[in-house]
Image (cartoon, rainbow, N blue to C red):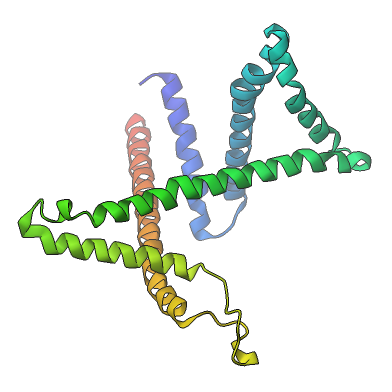
Length: 232
């Protein structure tokens, strides 16, 4: 083990102790470790943006690119300049245009990801699950595959019904103003069960990951204490 490795291991050991000190209450050492982590993360993200986006996608094409490439960079460069000028209090309105563009772009990415990354693949999986060829591929698992397809269908329809916020156009009384059709209410209850199971699985995964990280840090602390005490 080289001196450099030993120094960085010691730094990691001290930072781990500082973070774990939160177990006895909020203190200066924990806040210092958190501030270091946030600062290092912000610095890493800033360097990554400069090296991976600004330099190769903006600066280098402006300097060494052809005329068509420079022409297409006028719009993003103008948006960047407006965003920077908008940081001045007197010209804060200049940042509205780039922020609106970013918000629209983010919304389009989220909607596109939900449709093409979740809804369409889930619909395709349901159709594949109801393929009779898959049911009878393994005769001993035919009913199990049919049950799996039915559960998948009810789960998908139930979750989509739970997030359906429409209401009746015709109302029998004023008390029915905010009620949905009974069939959507029933399917929404089914969707709540599937959502609860999903969130429980996600929480279990996060908890197990955090527990594994804690065990790894405790093992690291034990190894460092052994090295330090052994060196003495």
